[in-house]
Structures are given as structure tokens and as C-alpha cells.
Length: 334
Image (cartoon, one colour):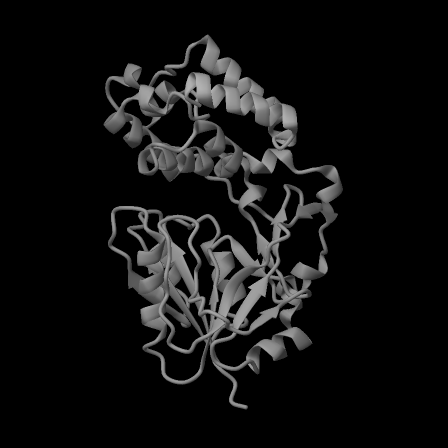
């Protein structure tokens, strides 16, 4: 059976902190790497141009829209002739290096068109000692058959998902997620997520937004597993640094949260748990004027609710927590 062209599809917006490492790793297994860049200004585009396998395309959108960027990536991939294996990874995600000479990889390469490939997601904790994984397997690979992609604005499927499509569920080859290795960067992104949810789904409860974007604080120690260094060895044997973390303390999401506050006012986001940093200081760092408009608008009650949410995140599904949430929702509009 003819082996497919392996095409990695990756959306990028200011990922210079990790993009060079990502492209070094992907270049070991992909025939083509399609980067859809969304107005990066941190050197991401220049990094991408250094790699011969990269096809750099523009995502000119000024807004966050996952189906739009996936359409750009998939359409560009379909310009490449022949059978195609699409692997969709964000820039902070890496196939475990044990794909090399792995029978699972051979099964993927020999799959028929229309087959969905599902991966286990390895969320690495700082220090590379432990990880946790959702029980759900993620459909991030596809032997392309031309099916239409249907997405949603946020947390969208990355590939077409034809009804009744055959699946290959990988157990040995996984996807390592580097997001949590830089905890401060992750927190900045998740503050932005919360603001995005409030703006785009204003009827959604503040408690449900909190619970979704603070899940990483409720990982049970029983769910932590030892990180397998073999997942890095194949890359490190190629001279790729897989363990150092570049820390840039200026995050694009901080500026975008400030833009939200400028547009909607601080009180609009009073119930979102974004006030753990001083936004007036952040506004000064970005040379914004009238920094007092970014001051924390919460009163005593709202601060107490946020404190309670933080304390109960590890036990959010208990009867008591659910009962209190229901009362807060009905009486106080949470």
C-alpha cells in the first residue's frame, strides 16, 4: 500500500518561545509542515522560514476563530497531491519520540482514507517528573478523504470527523503538552479564556467558566503518573534540547485582557477570576493611560466567592459544592 505524505498542520500566534524546538521535532517525521500564522510579531514567522519543510501561510483574522484557521490549514494541505496523513498539533505539543520504528506508527501509515487517529494527551507538570492525562482520546490525525471540516469557535475539532469513520486509537505513541511547564504563561492564557467566554457567551455562569479554566488545580495525586524519559530520548539523541523552558514575562494575553477591560469596563468581568494580578500595574507596563480604569472592581462578597471556588476546585463535583453553586446561581446570579 502506498504510504501517505505526512503533513503537520499548526496554527501559530506568537509562539517564538517554543516554535524552534517544535519545528526541529516535527521535521523528523513530517514531509510538510503547514504553519498558519495569525499576525505574529515576536519572530515566529522568521523562525518558521528557517525550515525547509515549512509552508507558511497567512491567517489575517484579527479575532479568535478556530474553524477559520483550521480551514486555512486543511485547504493548504489539500493542494499537495497524493494520499495524505494530516497530523494536527499546536506549537506546544510534540509526538512522543517513541514513534520511531513503532508498530503503531506503521498502522497509521497503512490506514485507509477516512480513518481518524486518536491520541492520549500527556500534560507535563513542571520539572518533567510527572504528568496527567484526560481519559478522553483526542482525534488529531486523519487519513484525508476530502471530507468537510465542521468546527466551533473555541476548543474545536481540528480535523474532519465523518460519521461512522474507522478509528485507530494509539496507546504507545502520545502527544506531550508543554503548556503547564511554564505555569505563569498558562495562567495568563487562561485569564484570557475566561474573558473570551464572558464576551462571547454572556449568559454562561461565572462558576462554570471558573471550573473549566481552573481544572489544572484539581489534579488528584492519584492521577499523576511518572513521566517517561523515553518519550524525549529520540529527540535528544538528535541533539534537540527538550527540557529547558524559555520564559518571556510579557504575554500577549495580558494585553488582550487589558483590551477587553478597555472596551467593556472592569465591572463587566467582575465575576471572572482574573484579578489575581494587578491590572493597573500591567497597564503601566504596556504604557497605557488612565490605569485606574483597570483596577479590581470586586467587593467583599465577590472576593469571598472566588476564594471559595479556589478552595473547592478539587472537590467541585461534591453534593455540597453543587448545592452551594446552585444557590449562588439562583440568588446571586453566578
